[in-house]
Image (cartoon, rainbow, N blue to C red; front, side):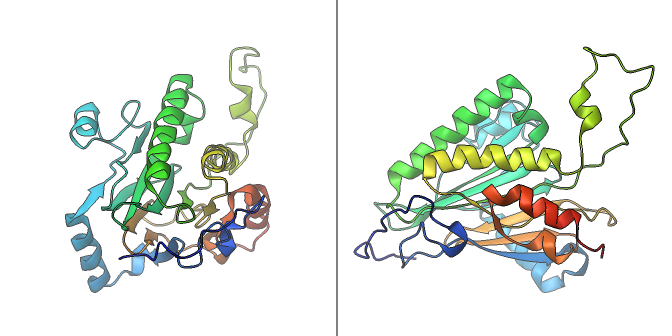
Length: 275
C-alpha cells in the first residue's frame, strides 16, 4: 500500500484525541480492531489465521535466549517480555493472559510501506522487577526511536491490548501475617489493579515518545469459563488491521478507550451487569 506523502501533515494539538485519530494525517488510517469469539470460530476463519502465521513474525512470549537472538527480538529473560523487530511484516502472538501488548505502526519514509512493532509483556515482571523494568524501558524506547526516526510524521498510530481481571483472594490480616516481611500490597490488591498499573505505565512510556495517548483497543478479559481463555492476536501490517481472538465478553470489555481513561473504564466494567 502506497501513501500520498504530499498530504498535509497534521499540526499536533496539546492533547490529540486518539479515538478520533486527531494525531494522524487525514489520509492515514488508524489501527482497526476486530474481536472474534474463540468458541464459535468457523473453519474458514481458522484456516485464515493458520495461513496468516506462515508469513508473519511470531512474537513468542516463551522464547528463550537463543530464540530471541535467532529472531532478532528483545527480552530480559524467558517469560518477562518480548518485543519484535520494527519491520514491514505481519505479526502475531498467543497466550495473553494477564500479559499486555503494544502495537505501534507508521509509514516508512523511504518505502511508503507500513512498518510496525509488537510487544508481549508480563506485568508482574516489567512493573516490579527492577532489572526487567529497566531493560523493558530501554528496549521499548530504542525500538520506538527507530520507528519514529524512520516514519513520516502524522502516520504513527499505537494501541495497547491484552490483560485480564485478576483472581484475588479475600484479604486477611491474621496471626501468620508478618509486617515488614510479607507483601502488604499483594494482600490489599483488588481486581484489575495490575491491569490498571500496566496500562498507566505503558501510556506513560508511549505518550512521552509519541506525543499522543494511545488507544486501548479493547478492555481486559474477565471470562474464564472456557477451556482456553487467553487472547491471541494477529496484526495485518499493510492494512493496519488487528484481529483479536478470545472468549466472549460483555460489551464493556470490548470497548476501546484512551489509556488515560483506564480507571473510569474499569469502574464501568465493575458496575456492569454480569452476562
